[in-house]
Length: 71
Image 1 (cartoon, rainbow, N blue to C red):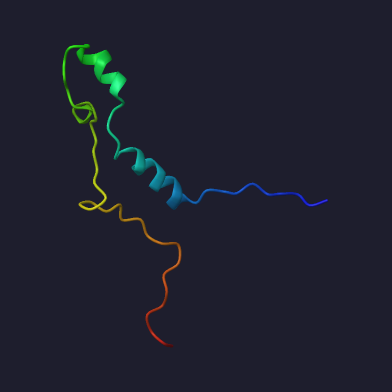
Image 2: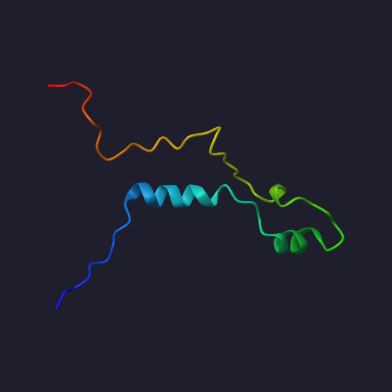
């Protein structure tokens, strides 16, 4: 009988998933709940922290860095 091991998430994947949530706008129903039905407001006004993949980088280092010299 072969046992399957559970895959562990690396710290890099955990950090990327958390930062990936910061790129989204607020859901449309929260805008209706906060500002009212008649108010036309863009969902980005409710999102406090907004990051862009092109402007700011996360500065996550790789686990292993290749040696640049030939030895």
